[in-house]
Length: 424
Image 1 (cartoon, rainbow, N blue to C red):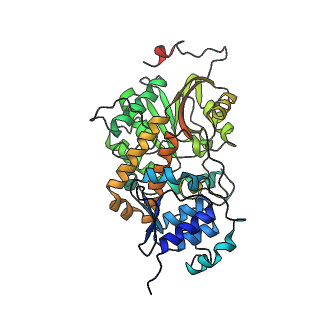
Image 2 (cartoon, helix red, strand yellow):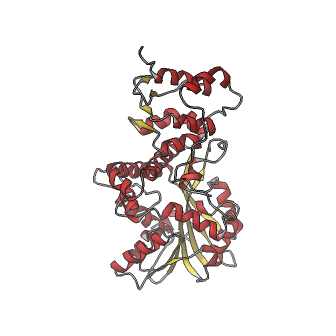
Image 3 (cartoon, rainbow, N blue to C red):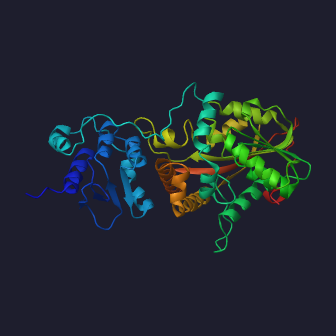
């Protein structure tokens, strides 16, 4: 007697449990398929993936199965994520659903069993949230993956933040857009030869080197990532900029090198957390000269999805302890430290385009990326960057450059009264 195909039974089972139609085609571990034919295919390679969802019926359960390679997507990943968004971001809790009615199917499919261990790529931090020690753990988890891996994703610029796309010309690429972003920041800060710039969260040194080379400033860059610092120092030395640029592994709370003429913070503040943000802004305020400018480039929550039931994929695998605050919260905290906010520029669409290029870079050299890290780590980066691109495109999150000044005691800002006057 022929064995009954698994995919149709699986589709019915999942739709009963989740109480919603499955919006993609399913392929089960026996090769059978069910569902609409004109969609990407969600490949369920192992029944363990479903066991994970029984124990963790939320975003994290799905993410664990994907990172472990127990589920995969064939076809366009962005389309699949769009169609699965309701299940990924707002999956209903299974508790209270009619599991008894499908208990026999669960047993026959081998879905009921002990809880599988999380993939090795999942991170659990220890210690007090946003303490120096725990922040260093979080930063190391994300950034100390390997400079060669990041070079595949980020390209030659090695800049890990939203690019600024000023052209649609076919010859204009990611490196051009990242250069234009760094230059936009330098112009907003009104950098001039001989000035001192503090670059907080300096990454692989892109901003520090651009400011030193193109604007003749002295730069101190700080990061918590030893791998970033090693790479940045090497690049600085090879560029002949060692006399202008210093790179340190240092916590922003330990800074005591001011006063600086300007401060850049690019993609750093998301790691600080809303609670410590007031202290963060106060530290930068103390390090700045009166009349000096701060450029804060930061991702913001716009229309966030409801908090997942339990830990999120991003927190477990990508940015442990990272927090996205609304733009208004960030501006209020910056002003609370004494700054005067003079300009805000939204770059949401620019980040979506940047992320799509990063995903394409990763996919184009997938085998090398896997060899440099692990299959699970490469899947983490592909999933989070693709999902983030969609989040920017759909307006769930944004990214903004906030330009602020430390006023003189009499209130003077040393800034021209119009944007045309200071954004030269």
